[in-house]
Length: 167
Image 1 (cartoon, rainbow, N blue to C red):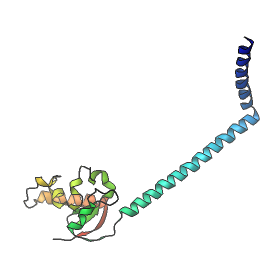
Image 2: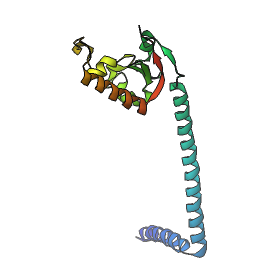
Image 3: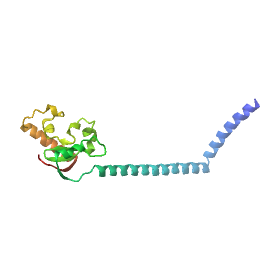
Image 4: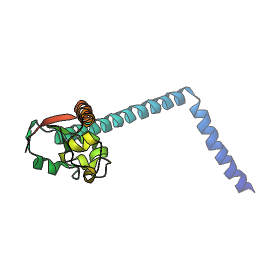
């Protein structure tokens, strides 16, 4: 019994000593110093991680940026969104647009992947995704208006990287 009372008194004693030392002037100063140190270290780590993310984003933007030039339709094929290390290009009514920022839409598994790496003028004008649905008829006035709206939308949202050479 005496040993059990001694063990209990040691546990209570340790907690009592901790509590009493924490609620003293030195205890408050120590706790405040530890809290400030924790805050500063966490801020430094956060800044380091933010700069690392910013550097990766800059590298991605540099990799995905293309200089404007004249393109042939067959030159667009390698930029079809299947390679995540390359930009995604879409031809629209004589211009070429880099839509890499919309990879989840125009990339390999995106709902509009059929537009990537080719001249999507007729698909956009006719508002179809599957090229087999194209009837081959000339574009109507309404379809031409659709095309102008798509061209305006894509040009305002994504980067224009040149013109598409007529074949």
